[in-house]
Image 1: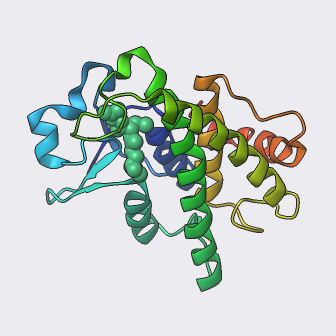
Image 2: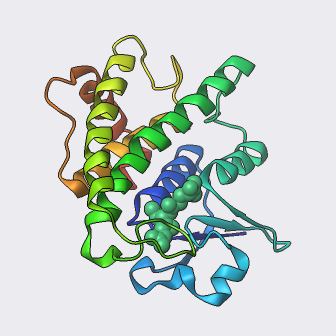
Length: 211
Ligand SMILES: N[C@@H](CCC(=O)N[C@@H](CS)C(=O)NCC(=O)O)C(=O)O
């Protein structure tokens, strides 16, 4: 199998940390986003979503979207569990991973993609061209500030994002916090729970190896 990757970008980094946590090594194929390789016909034929990461199995099956890729690896390589172990843990993991993606990563992306010069007409990931919007960028800043506050409050009473177990939800939240630096937003000093959690996560070898 092959993982189509661009490790400098926040979403591919999520899968790279996930694989490092599981100790899985997989062949990588570079898709250079700065050259627009994700939009080229050969890649688009494999992945109509035109994003990375994307996993191609040996039988030619192509799986995009990080949750789907994580699910695949969790099924074939269950240890250590990264998507929860019990029915409740699995549901909490889905819930918090989704919240971290929607309210964290996508909020930062809303600012970044609507302001960065290189993203004119590329305000959304995918095959379609969307113009930048200053209003969306401004709204995104407010969403990022609320993401920090909401997750700080949550982590006041939880050791990890999905509860008392480490999971992919921690990886997505960490990736969102690091992506926020691209728009010069840092975890606010008053968000002490989030900061303490972040420092613990950033020290993990799998994260260090993908920083
Ligand atoms: N929802 C996707 C997100 C993937 C994504 O947004 N990837 C970005 C890199 S961080 C990308 O491929 N961008 C392509 C582009 O900017 O055209 C997933 O879960 O895999």
